[in-house]
Length: 121
Image (cartoon, rainbow, N blue to C red; front, side):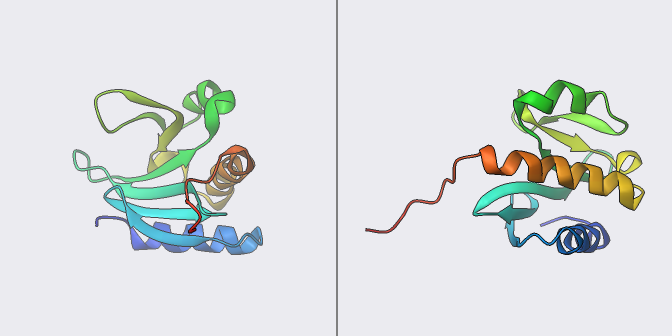
């Protein structure tokens, strides 16, 4: 699992500052932050550039605007863009206010997502 531990600590601090309970899961080649049993955001290292990337789950409503923000890139794992998700490179999350902006966008979208956890019978 390749991810930037310093960026992970910064994200943990953002969740704590915003007083949001979160869990961490290693998945998708990096580290995902779960809120209410749903993926909220994540981090990984871009294999081509060796840059740290934030995976921001912002939803379809904010998707196009998100792509116009500094450092935002289309999230593409399979050869097709994943609508509602963007990667944010280091130039878009260098400062704490920039990182907080993206974390807040992810948290704003999180309540609109259905949980994928199946209840045990």
